[in-house]
Length: 522
Image (tube, rainbow, N blue to C red; front, side, top):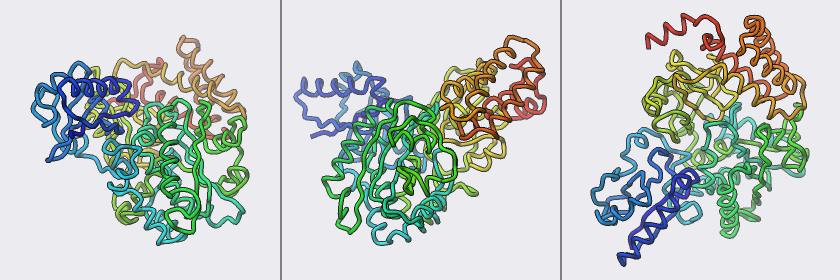
């Protein structure tokens, strides 16, 4: 029986993957052909979705983007033997977009049936857990520390240090919490993994539980991800049935279980303490720190709270060894990062690579520049509260410290591309308005400052006493940056100040000659 792989990822389904799968089944029945349609996650080449693959003796062959009306001609041409067709792409691994990647965390995504434990184990799943059980709690923490893994949610805090703190804190109960409240613009890595390879997160959280002595974990997923919630909930049940969750997991003396919790749609719940408040059934407001969640987190117990990608990176670190992971990257940024390329770009999608590529390589070479065919004017890195980078800064290495040195942040790995039709004053205003709407209201700088900032921006854009209002705006940004209780208010100045610095002409100021001279030289 011929096997055909069709993505069930939300991005692929949004452009017709379900209809393509139905049409494949219908056309096969019409021709009295037996086919087995396997729904996978996405490989992350979104401009080619729906991208289907047919299994052959020489490996899988891809076709895309496939529309329902293309299916008949694919069968006529000889789809089941991977025959020539205008939509034939060849072996997915040979496509330049995939060939250039270093896929560790996303190694199985788009390849396996996300709810097949057999598929997961065949492709290396649960090898990390087996090694973790042989190392023991202290050995696991040491291995994660040596790998150099840092938080992939934005702060970049060393994961091993966080785990050791929880492990060393005595308590009757401890928790592992996965922050899958992926709210940044241009990000979709969490969703892709939850829909395409949920067992890797389950394995990572199980390893974390053994490492710190936690017996319960929660996966906090945003309500806007119904497919991710459904698939992950099913995967947990499958893992539990197979003995990979619950008491005496994988035949060991350890116990660990998982539960999915759905968020209520508040951006601020991506902040770790607001997320914990929400998990406890309270309104999502930020807690003052200290105490840190590692000491008093969920239900006042020591809690490891990590971003999904951080936890999902743990199995490969344990299975392949810390040194293998630490050998990738640059400086203090070790391993790989799933870079999410979005916005006005030709080749939008997920690109997992070791740290060190330049921003220009990612946007212009890998992403292919603006989809509109116009010049790229700005790239926002790190979500709606990330800085805007002009082409003059495209030589910046994709690295935590390199971005910080240029007043930027990596955040969750999202990049949103804008062409030269964008109005950067409007984008700066949007950041302030976004903060005003999404603020939990607990601290004055964020609650009031963002609202006043929006009003000031309106005066600037209307041309009212522009220089005085711009000076006031800059002063207000300093107050937000250093006076806010959490990163929501603290990061709002990044897009505002970067827009003012690199695109002064949009605010009625003279262009920055140094910046534009650098851009011309590029």
